[in-house]
Image (cartoon, rainbow, N blue to C red; front, side, top):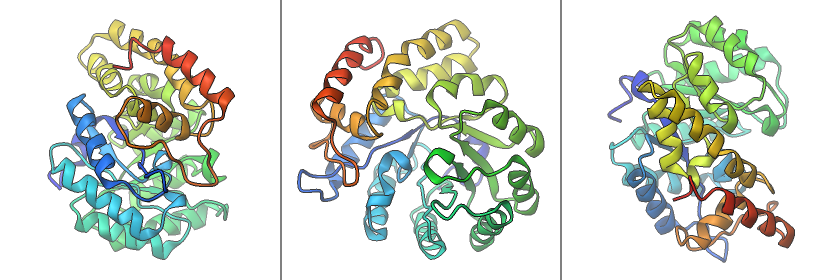
Length: 304
């Protein structure tokens, strides 16, 4: 909760950690907390859980709360904690957000409701409801149209920002970079924006972004955090070198559906007990695993 009163301090590489499961498919709290410790040791500037990389749609509300609780205990205010609390259902979103607030989260990352494809007015009312319910908790909109089939428009984001002081930022996971710029232009350059597109993380900093919530941080937390730090300290050459060095790793993450490749690697590195993903996802196929191995060999510079 230390960063809740000043969300502008929530910057840098916010690692969206996977949710480890046992071989039997049960929530593995021990592996999750160990993973958070490793992330902090490697320099990640913040921790998020329950986003797309965390398989929230395959978990019950109770499991998502248990995962949030474990991460809140492990971060212990050392870095910002931004749990994903969104769902396709409003009652679940409100319950998860209430738990995040109770657990001391610094902000709640709320995904656009998926599958239903709501209109822009419906999106405005959805986020307005969440923001009004939790006026003391910073709310971060999570825009990921490839997963939700709906894209929140820059003007809708601006309306929400004008209407609710606690709507402080957005995680943009769209490959339309003009969209990034339009949001900041309409909302004001003090509006916080994090990139969820790995290869747009560095470019976002050039137009005033606050950082990134990149799945690449699951495997290369030090390199991703260093890319942010190098850029903000004026060492643009190092930041650019890291950006390009991360390319094979980014390809690795999406050889098959995220987070299956990341979990496959984390298990083999001994960082989680099992790479199990819940249905409808599957662990990487034989062909997928072979390609992951090839790309991992090309990523030695950053995965360490």
